[in-house]
Length: 187
Image (cartoon, one colour):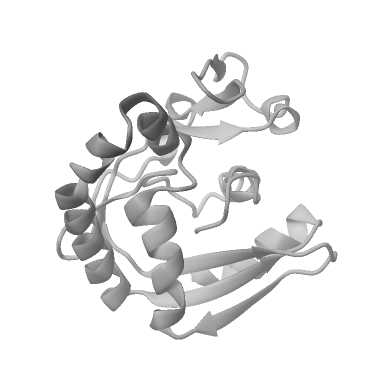
């Protein structure tokens, strides 16, 4: 699921964890190998204060960040029994789109429609604050030195994309309708 920061990924992930069929493989930074297989790599889920109030006592901590406002994070240890232990083929790539409406929808897309989003979010990591902090700390010269890493990431993401079906999930303001729209991908 790829959405810009603040787009609703974490709220949707927390709703997904209420469904016993859902298992956790990764959060912001999934680990894909060169065959497009996703390996378990759950670190934490960044959440907002509203969602934090609904979670198990002691499972949320505050992360101080250098250049950005503090963030709340759900320690996935609270959901240890929900972590998938085995690697899985990437089955779906979901490109999210926010709407001001109350409805949500899921529609298939051609694979090429996900390429730009994958490069921006999963190769470069524009939406991952740690990547932005790296740039601010290290400077552009060190970023250029990461070109090899970006190439490997691009190859692994391309392998995953070759295996996966691509979808556009239009998210509205109703969290339950958003979840209901995504639910068909679990079957």
